[in-house]
Structure formats: structure tokens, C-alpha cells
Image (cartoon, rainbow, N blue to C red):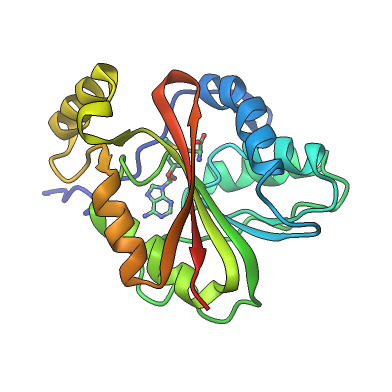
Length: 217
Ligand SMILES: C[S@@+](CC[C@H](N)C(=O)[O-])C[C@H]1O[C@@H](n2cnc3c(N)ncnc32)[C@H](O)[C@@H]1O
């Protein structure tokens, strides 16, 4: 019998289990700086849609820091969804049930109420470029005028690119030629094509960026 590899295998970072709750070393490290930075960017009582929530630790850190937020997590990976929902028990109702969303599925954003912001960390480099396209196609449906997309992760930025991110890009492409650290210029162009203009860039620890694009009116 022959087995065909899944067309788009999902890459997950290393995670330690505690019942259904998973903990990733990277999310444990960066949840404080991410939640602090996002807290300064999101409007009061913002409805936030998160793509690729991973373990759910970022979501919990964000709603703990900003209890006014209403957070909708999503994940295509079932064990990750279970982890997000387990962490959500500590969120006192501010995290909704984790949705099963693969942004490479056409029309993934249909049938939802509007959101004020879309957040996605550490995904578009470890998935085919079509996943980045899917993020902005969905954001065009989900985010109303004045709302924003916030992406966290490594980016290529010409001469400002950190050597560690160039090495990371090479490693990713070796694992799957469709993956790779994305060029800031290419993501800006993608965002602009979908009605979003860049409004922010924050340097984050370990040569990551938190980038923001606002929906044009
Ligand atoms: C490196 S992990 C990052 C998880 C979390 N955002 C974080 O920063 O800790 C990449 C995540 O992207 C998700 N992912 C991969 N392909 C995806 C897709 N096409 N649509 C939505 N999520 C995807 C995986 O399930 C995984 O949870």
C-alpha cells in the first residue's frame, strides 16, 4: 500500500504537555513582550481574531493583561485547539472556543461577525506563501475600516535583516521549499493589495517584529 504525505503538513513548535494544556518554550518566552506590545495597540474592548493560536498561551497572556478584550482563537491542529480551550478556562470567559481554521482553505473567513483586529504570530514563515495570502484575504472580510492586522515573527528587511533570520530562512527552506522568512516588502505589498496600509513596526526580542497594517476606509 502506498501512503501519500499530506499536501500541507502543519509545523508545530516543541511543546510540553500538562493534561490538555500544552506549553511551548518560545511562547513562554515571548508571551510577556507580545501581550505588552499588543496591549498598547488594541482599542478598548477590541474584538480580536487570532489565526494559528498554537498552544493558546499568547491569547491567555493578552486577555489577562487587557481584560476588556474579547478574543477568538483559531487553530487547524486538533491537539492545539484542545490546549487553547484548556488554557481558556483561566480566562474568565474572555477567550471564546477555539475555531478550526486553516487560512489556506478558500472562504475560511465567511459567516463571522466583524472584528477590530486580527493577530497572528509565527505562522506565515512556516507555511506556504498561500497562508499569508489567506490571512489577508480573510482579514479583508473580517476587519472593518479602521481595524488592523498585527503579525509577529521574523522578517527579511534588506540590509537590516538579522543574520540569525537569514540562517533561519535557509533552515526553513531546507525543511520545505515553500516555507521561508517573508520579506517585509512582499508582505506590505500583499497587505496593500487587500486594502491594508502599514501603520506600525515594533522591534521585539530575538530579532522578531510586531507589524501593524490598518484597514483603509
Ligand atoms: C510555529 S507555530 C506558532 C504558534 C503560535 N502562534 C506561537 O507563536 O506560539 C505555527 C502554527 O501555525 C499553525 N498553522 C500552520 N499552517 C496553518 C494554516 N494554513 N492556517 C492556520 N494555521 C496554521 C500551526 O497549527 C501552528 O500552531
